Length: 260
Length: 260
Image 1: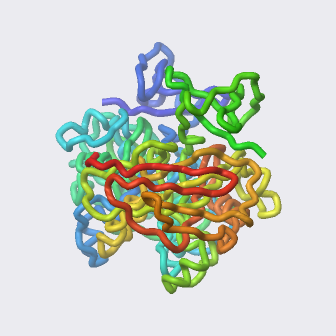
Image 2 (image 1 turned 30 degrees about the vertical axis):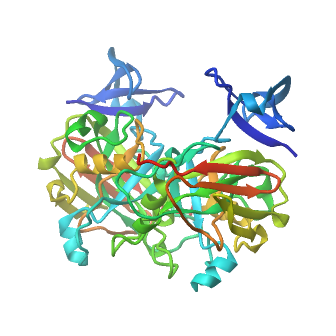
């Protein structure tokens, strides 16, 4: 089991590596191609972790947990329900979420498990799909909540969730996560707001990737956000949101205190 | 005024160029960077036109024409309403639209004007926006119409419009289109189905790009489909749909007669 990261060395260089106790083992090569572990390690204190991948698209699921669906009175879907967040919405650990200048309303956090695709993937059966999954990371699927229903005729899921900085990813991609035993824990300014078992999913990660691969080709580095469960809520400007999944780590991002 | 194309020479090579009467003037360089016209021309009969750009994202507008909004009884929106179609949905002129194996329902054509972004674009004012627009092309914004409302709780715009091959683009990007004077004409198997003035838009291309650039960063090659107007409808398997905008040309794509 390895936890893969993408980092900046603060001297203009970037690289990939695997997390060790207090350092990163630098690897040569490509995250989604061939790579080899080198001799060099860099102390975590001397680098900045970046988003662990740069997805071309983030496919974000809606209504994928039994507990939240029951609370909202929504029947379980028969195929994954989703929207696409653009790659431009992605930021890494520690980067600031920015309130859009045009929007003064509530901004919601949603702690979620995210799947990272490792190989080009089209029409893949559930039984075959693990070979196409590189691993798992945490996502905070940030939402400008009051935009969703602002137009009476068209729910603006894409706009509400697609702003720059609204997909926080990281800190690492775990390539062998036992997601059935894992929980998503979301804290806002130190107070626990979400703590739910990933096993409560309606569509498993394997069913999700297989199902979406019937609809569109997925590429290495593409991300699928598996949907959130109960406890999602709003965060004030200046608040820090932490999403933790054991085996992956803690993703921490502040909603910038000022506009823009 | 130039009409830019991306082509395959049928010997494994691809290139960019500008349309002349029966040929393409080959250019050296990058479509969204520096390029220079060469001496070489290739007869159109000896090349295949490809999608004129490879967008990272296709932002597709909904309810952007007065005539269609009035027909459907939908009030004009106050901000562009949109979803994102993945880049994987793009095909070029002459390529086949493929029915998803999972879907047996109606497949709709929507002839539209598409904006092609030329420069990285974030928070750009309407008055400044033309410097960020590379040009205009035609799009057939194909839709698996019966999926949109298949789930009672979540309109599946992204899925219905995001399948591979569901964004037909081309044949060329016109870098100086007088869109106010142009019409979108859509023919299915030779019968006219749409013929509407682009000037009936609710949000102009300049307002669209400015508005979306407030929400997300747009990159060179990104495409915005400006929405369709009256006459959209379904096409049978095996039908050929042609979208024509004077100044750009005719984009022709067949819905493949067989499944997959």
